[in-house]
Length: 178
Image (cartoon, rainbow, N blue to C red):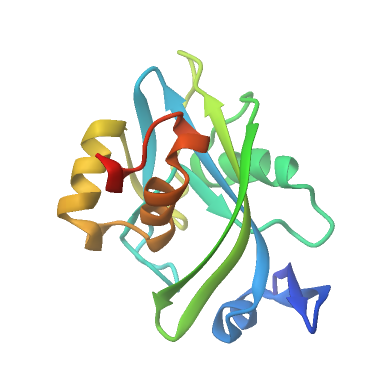
């Protein structure tokens, strides 16, 4: 089944097949969510069957909106589809753009809307094994240390968010400044 996502082709936003977008390195819309609980961030380890960056640790949820879908609706949908998280309200933090080689001849060139979710104490997590291999809660300081010492186990976009956008997302200096 072909999934169409919003991508820019010749300066115009059009629905383009997701795999084609990544193979061609087209600039496209994306959504990233960070679920926070007190001083901790919920990370996901991507399923080993993912066509790029399998097994790497990423932010809580990252995806592409369907053609015509709002970023907030996409964030809510994918939290449920990937992690079984429902009843949470995403708060928009920032729009960022990045370009990164994600392996297998693919490029992520994303214009991404970044959201945070303040987890409720009763928030449940139910992993979709086709999307997520594992999850873990980690403090910002411990995450910054791990990314600095073992960058290869994290997705390129998580490293970029921590290095370039952590003040907007978390209200803290980026890992390069620590």
